[in-house]
Image 1: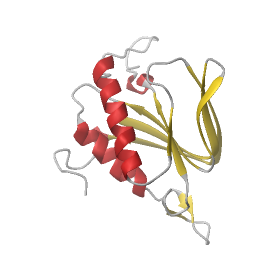
Image 2: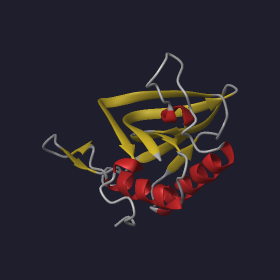
Image 3: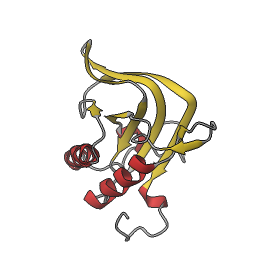
Length: 156
């Protein structure tokens, strides 16, 4: 799975002019399931993101997690994170999980994120969404489960 995280002061997602998810300070998570991904990858990302120290401490250093600062998360599905731009000028998306698997893993990720105790707002899988955010910092972090040192290891 791939995730693009943005530390935000506020973020929201709208579908058909109706706001369906919004948060104050926290993390906007754009997420994409890739071919071959499973619940293991979702669990790994939840574990990593919920503990990732990207918020400032009293000394101004990024040393606190979203839970440490009482923040929330907004999770938005975004299959375009699977874009392959190595050739030509039109991205290919064949490495993204099929829509049914992508939706299953999106909901799995959201459920596991809620299980951490963090407040979680969501977008709508497959919908045409408008995402608004105030990037704080700006801080933007890319995570890809294919990049973890021991892919077969369980989160821990």
